[in-house]
Length: 229
Image (cartoon, rainbow, N blue to C red; front, side, top):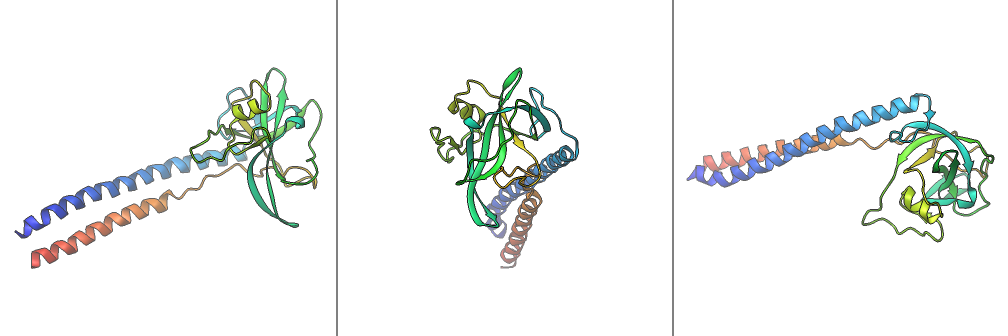
């Protein structure tokens, strides 16, 4: 009778233990995957930029030249930054770059305040930009709605932004400009580093394995009480 009383709890414990261990192993695999990505990003940031090709790798550091079209500028996202003047709302300034023999490329030139004078942008037919390749985004079910008429976007989808700007075709990725902090008071503030996704998978793995160990301890304590009764 005592062993029968342990049968159902034992089966439930085995099932739950398998789930917890599976989740822990999955996080270990994710840890290795994320560590490799971060190492790749570190290597790309330390390496010299290469000329932009037709199909660059995601987050590759590249250089490209062309003519910026500030008349087709758009804004992406919304971000408040703490500046010497205080907390200032703003967004990323996205401007098409016309290239010889290739489709226009959307360039995220950096953060600009929501209000103020028009940002100062380089001019000429051969403006050089160094940045990293950012893959296209696609709106999720909870994404904010883009204001195409106002050229304000919350999903960095080059095809959708290009169409709203009247460009029939654009490169299927965005170039995020890299550079030192703001060179002029009214210039966009570019990204200083390549993005680095959070790597919390070790903590998650420890949590799942810890819960598995706690589950085994609870069952052992319960089994001892049942067998001693």
